[in-house]
Length: 402
Image (tube, rainbow, N blue to C red):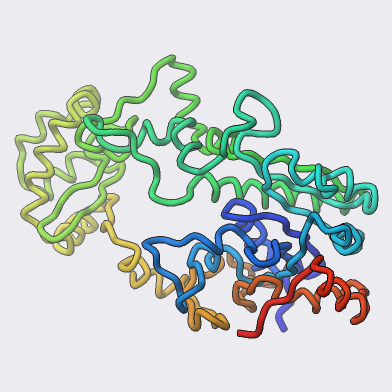
């Protein structure tokens, strides 16, 4: 078996929904031993949620399957008297704890940073939240679209004569997951030098502000907000021709490109009257309308070929299904599949980071609730008799065979 970069790292994962599970999946793809702690019966809340009321294999949530491969599941009732016996023993040998409960909830149950630090001073404890762990928004739900609205990205996206538009994916949560991984890997590296663990706190609000660094710097230092173009120019701070344009059979994107080259492709020299920095920004809606009227007469393929021939930065606009079948996506082997005991063959996006010596891979499907309960308990020294007692007492549960 190929060596994995994080093969000697054990992660005790209390997280649910998207931010925390995506973080731990990234660690698991690199070989970390991720032990997912779930509630008996219900499990991760994402198991109960799906898009378009569609369930893989009739019962499995695509949302859950997307973020939980390469992990093992142990189903533990955190309020059971035996929960601390079980999870503290795992914590003694764990390297990392990840959780994204509402601030303070896990600590009240006895599974906070101080609790694990007492039994394992080398523990790295990473918490994810919506708005941090104090302040006026502490009681607010920290959901992705709400964060996009609060941090300016929704107000900067879409047409100027329309409503703000959130990004069509869980962007805040995924940025938060990346920040969690960044913090955990930094803490692991520092622990190699110092021998000490530490606490990490990541929140969606700060993450989304940080990932709009150039937009925030511009707005704050010039004391002015961006204004969205009515034509839907792709970024509110950019001049024409930056944007999305219709063709006879679809859409194309045009990014920062020499304006004169685009005019030469489209063949309408009257557009050259706008060729100065002031007009390209202030009259961008007017320019967009005139360019769009011309691009509509081209097929996407013909327009792309003509623009690429003169080094214009451009691309096709594709749906998710079209993206999955894109020739470059196929060439990069960016789509893979695994077998799930109930959902069957599940197509997934492959790990995005390529490493020459310790490559990431998909070796486990997303687990059933408590699928690995007995296996994990045995691994951490609990006898078969103790496991049967935990099962009988309701402290843990074991998945039914598929």
